[in-house]
Image (cartoon, rainbow, N blue to C red):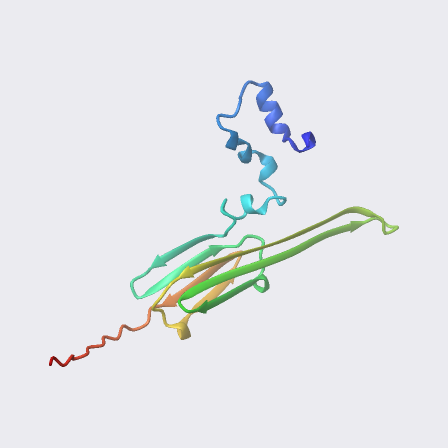
Length: 153
């Protein structure tokens, strides 16, 4: 297990820069690479970074999905819930002239988030995915006022 200790931490300890908290170890470069995608490309809760904005007549959602392609992302709206699901599989396979492995790495991951956004016009939802960022525009449904006269006995 000692082989997994980041070298930066050892150097900092030797210089007298001890961590202030036990959780400081997660800020080390060891945890900020492709091996831990939930800490580098996504937020610490294991989900994607998302902003939801109310523009008055519509809602606008922006989700960061770094390293994903359009084909990896699925978007659905059902019973007032907007769900974003993304799944990625990547393989880096390098071989020498004889077909022996020089390096072979695989990475798989998935992330999903749901948001309750009610009273939108489902037929006019517009989504665009560009440069690892998903933009979703959701126009609000026209408010219909229902007035019921109640007979008093």
